[in-house]
Image (cartoon, rainbow over all chains, first blue to last red; front, side):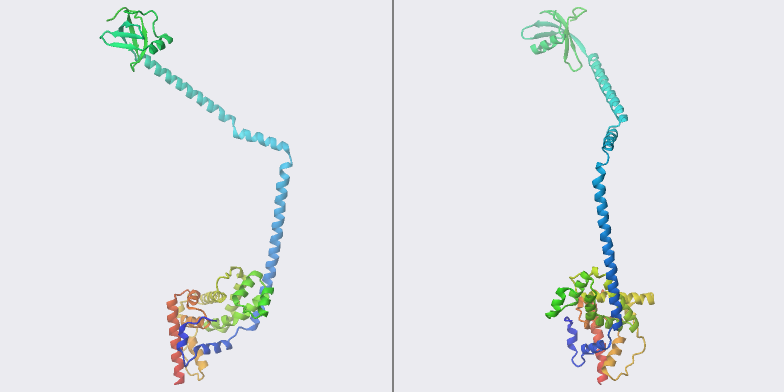
Length: 199
Length: 185
């Protein structure tokens, strides 16, 4: 043993280390204990050896079984595979789930159309009508309303109204017409008034 | 026994307990254990018999070696073997004390509670008497120091701070010195 604390160096006359060593030499472990201990060590080693071997064989056998099971199972019956595919389709696309989704979609679309229809109705109902006199037909129309406001309609708008049959083809310069607006002030149609001049 | 160990022995390289334990942990060879036992058993037994009686020391030493056999796979080659051995032995001894008298306070633990007998003429006998009359913790610290353990190792074995160990050793040595000086006078 190499490491000793410095405390030992102070004892000059009384060599405690030597006294301790002498005492140690007189008190030794009985030899019989060693025999018992080594016997136990051998037995432990033997039992451990058996256990290790058994573990090894068990592991090897289970691995072989696993390999056999994995390699033979897929080729046993092709019909089973087809059946399996059918089952998967059934599970992945259940019939019961289709009807509600289509039905819901149709209901939604119907509701949307109805909402649009109602909105259009409101648009048509919200229009106002004013009367004007056609002043010119060059490069579009110029209309003079009853309150002397002049409206210039571009040729594009005139063409668009004509295409939609919203512009009466019988109107002529100097004639009074009825102008139909929607609630946003957009001209919906220009018609010949049925009740005669209003201004 | 392994070839490398035999060669080391033949060419005179010191085979330390650490090498032996490492080899034993690997192989479980009873011959290696025998060498390890020869190297450490007497030191351990002396430590135990100084802190208990002969029968208990023999019993605890036996149990300690059995633990070494059964837990050899837990040995870490990074550390020294003897501190590990002594730590196991000390814990086993304290467990035995606790089993005998439920709760044990180390400071009060002393197996020799009789009045000190200072009639011994020989210095060896007197040393033996005084040593056995030291408080358990002082005796323990002194013995471990005599076994060659460093302060750090002793504090690890006993789970005590190094400063406390230093104090215990100083008190133990002073007591021994005082008692032995008296015999000279």
